[in-house]
Amino acid sequence: QSVLTQPPSVSGAPGQRVTISCTGSSSNIGAGYDVHWYQLLPGTAPKLLIYGNSNRPPGVPGRFSGSKSGTSASLAITGLQAEDEADYYCQSYDSSLVVFGGGTKLTVL
Amino acid sequence: EMELLESGGGLVQPGGSLRVSCAASGFTFSSHAMSWVRQAPGKGLEWVSSISGSGATTDYADSVKGRFTISRDNSKNTLYLQLNSLRAEDTAVYYCAKWYGPNSYKYGMDVWGQGTTVTVSS
Image 1 (spheres, chains in turn purple, orange):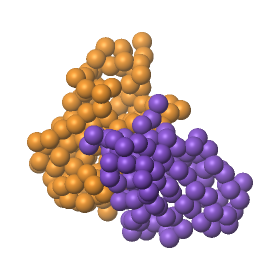
Image 2 (cartoon, rainbow over the protein chains, first blue to last red):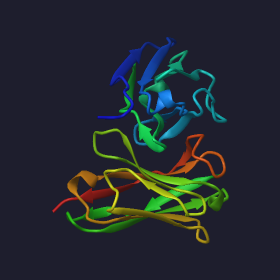
Image 3 (cartoon, rainbow over the protein chains, first blue to last red):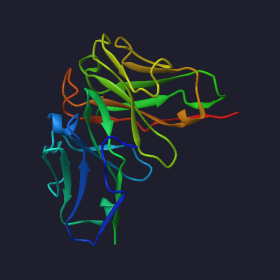
Image 4 (cartoon, each protein chain N blue to C red):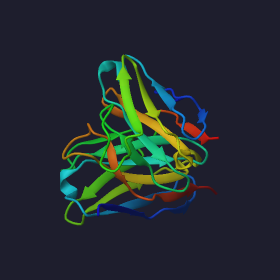
């Protein structure tokens, strides 16, 4: 069981908007720790998509955005594209140790 | 270009040991904390261990504490993970990752290697 809870799967049609939730507790996200998001494309290494709750590293398209409120965080993807089909993971900290969510598989219909 | 290249994975028997390495290039290695993250077959990402830029501070997941040791040689720009008392459940792809921002764990891991596979089986 992961400390951070994500839906196992989400789906959307090309051009649509999807969101992926990441639910924690008062010992991690709710304690004020930042949330980061990673994308795992099949057969490739993880890629940092969002850091510090809502910031995009250089090169990440503006279609990806992040937010955080209370004990939860969300990743939103607008203008869904076929190449967005991947696994997405949130990451935060619990008692200062690194924790990941269980991951969400995004299917582009 | 910043790059991480893992090596040293392989097949090992339960109870055995292995050392995996991660060679870094394209950035000031000693200025960045590093971590090992693993992904077991069909499972999600699991944080394993972290080490500060100087090597003075280390952290471990409960699942590996007392069995795995993280270290680094800043003169060789290389990160290591010594895996002892290996179990079947340690079978995974092991990724090394660099933390974004100097001397900080605050901004996420922005550079990842391609991973090295460790298989624990008799």
